[in-house]
Image 1 (tube, rainbow, N blue to C red):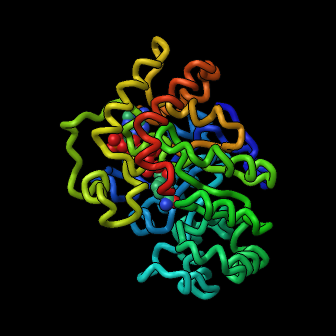
Image 2 (cartoon, rainbow, N blue to C red; image 1 turned 180 degrees about the vertical axis):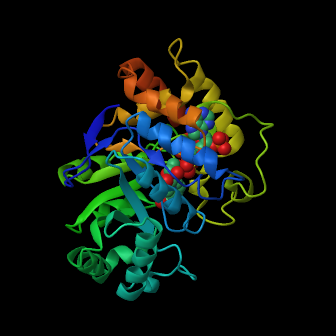
Length: 327
Ligand SMILES: NC(=O)c1ccc[n+]([C@@H]2O[C@H](COP(=O)([O-])OP(=O)(O)OC[C@H]3O[C@@H](n4cnc5c(N)ncnc54)[C@H](OP(=O)(O)O)[C@@H]3O)[C@@H](O)[C@H]2O)c1
């Protein structure tokens, strides 16, 4: 495993970290035993940073991570999220009282006295125009409830606005072979301000592992079934918002670029890690074997310039018209 600085936090986090959404819920049935095995394997591979949220399985993901921390001696940093318990999910809901209550829930679930990193969970855009929200987070940090805070965003413009607040340490954003716009302006600004970046949905919900086909079936409780058109939450969170059939064609073109003996998942993660602005990728994984394959990305050499250009070409031809200006 290799490690990178997470913005100004002073932490060195594993380049390949762990996304803990799937082990909580919304990805069909998962067994806690298998999820625990996946988490342990991640730590065995050198992963020291886990991304979760209070709403992943209504605390289930956070509670599994608390169990992992009890069972391991290594330092494990946890980034959780707050805000998605709001119903309706409005900017007004991001107030000091609600945030304090969400943080108490996460402290309980994670069996912690202080949260390492709390991210606003894709709040409405208007939240970034309310400095009092960030003031409330400063107060929670002052009170010793949270160590650092950051944001998880849908749009590049939200990311640019968020990092104007001086104590926003991290931005989580979708960035992968099928979602390249963050690299244009945002990464430059983030580097200038030394903001950490968590690249989420790095495998485009499994598409960029190369295993999915036209005939793949997803369980009723898997968002790849129930959120294909954004019925439950932002459509960009499912397959990066790319049309499934078009994405499969692009995956076949990427497959031709794989060096001998390299699987597509670590290759796709290595593509993301070519960006120095990125602190870590946070692939979701439900099984130990997936963790091992994803962590192999940290052992791959840099991708060749021709390979990078070829992926850019595939994006420009097939994917860009579908997603580039949407987020
Ligand atoms: N709004 C937000 O803040 C937000 C939204 C989305 C995600 N996130 C965070 O980002 C993390 C990553 O995104 P994601 O989980 O949505 O998508 P992802 O990482 O692109 O895809 C994860 C899924 O791909 C499959 N997979 C993983 N490794 C594989 C491998 N080596 N080979 C084959 N299949 C593999 C697994 O599903 P199957 O085995 O079932 O195919 C896994 O659940 C999440 O876990 C979460 O922590 C945050």
